[in-house]
Every structure is written in structure tokens, then in C-alpha cells.
Length: 242
Image (cartoon, rainbow, N blue to C red):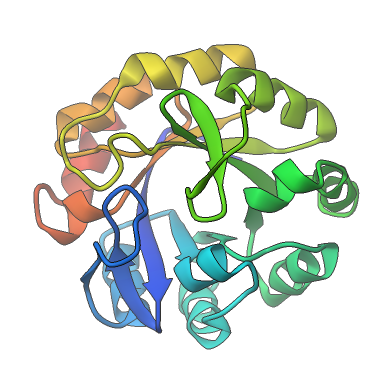
């Protein structure tokens, strides 16, 4: 999935615009304009993967922002991989996105509620499913980070790896969107639990945070607010970890 460590720009979409939330809470978002323009900006800067989250889909439990997602996939073309999450609840949802040209879908709530869906998608698209494990206070949370599950992130990662997930997207919700720095030890615990790639997310404020997550064993890191706010350039971060 990742030939080398990647810095992946986030293109989170709400009401058709790029939005970055603080700890995933509605009403905390700052808007950054058109998703396609954002995607092209990151592609021009050398991004090899784009991370799209349909925030409306994540909150409402069904896909939204389909036009924006399709437009970003078209913009990426053959130049970059695209991974999409938010509101994907059924095999048909996943299939439609994968057939559209999305490289991998991200399952969060659906994976918790229906683990067999992970295996079903993996059977048809072996590299096509990432399982999103979003942790708050050491517990996996779902439904737009509003509901606890009682699941331990490392134990859950092991379970989904056995079901055929091609990777784990691990978000440290406690530091997400706050630009206060990462907690590499929290990420490394999940990395150590599985043999599949772990994509880290949450808390990145500096290039040093990116390096720390690479050193913790993550295969890639998703960066949102820090890039949009200009804390550092994508090319700068990529150069430091290559």
C-alpha cells in the first residue's frame, strides 16, 4: 500500500467545502474553500495520496457530498491514490466508491457494527479497505466520535487485520485538530499490534511531529489543520521523512 512513508493531506468535506474540526465536534470547524482546489494544491505539492472524509456522512450515517468526492477523484486521476471515509455503511457503498476510482474506502462505525463487512469488501477488493479506529480516552469511538464502544484500539486493530483489512487508520481524537503535538507512544501501541500498515492521524503541528510518527512505526500520517494553517509546507515534511 505504501512503498515508503507518506505525508497525506486531509480534504475533509462538509456542506461541499473543506472543513477542519477540533476533536471532531460539529460547530468547531474552520472552512478552507473548494475541495477540488485544495486537492489540486496538494497534488501540485507532490502528494501521493489524498485523504477524503465526508463529514456529513460520518455524522448522519449515510453518504453525502458525492459530487465533491467524485470531482476530487477525477482531479487525482492516475497521479495519486485516494482514500475515502464517512457514511460508508454497506458493501454497495464501498463498491460504488471503489468502482468510481477510489483506491480504498475507510470503515469506522460500519466496521464496529458489522465486522463481517470488512471481510466482504476485502474478498472482492483485497487492498480496498482501511479500518478507522478513532480513540478517545483509550477507547474506540464511532458515529462521528460521539459514541464509545468499549473497544481497546490495539486489540481491535488485531481483529480487523485478521478479517482482511489492508491497513488501519488510527486517529488520536484527544489531540485531533488542536495542533498541540502527537502522542507517538499511543500510535506505537497500535503499530506493534499488527503486521499491516498503520496510518496515523491527530495532533500534528510541526514537521517534528511527522518525524515522530514515522519513528513510531506508522506507514503514513494524515495532516489537516497544520497544512491549511501554513505551519509547514507539505514538501518540507515530505523531504524530512524521505
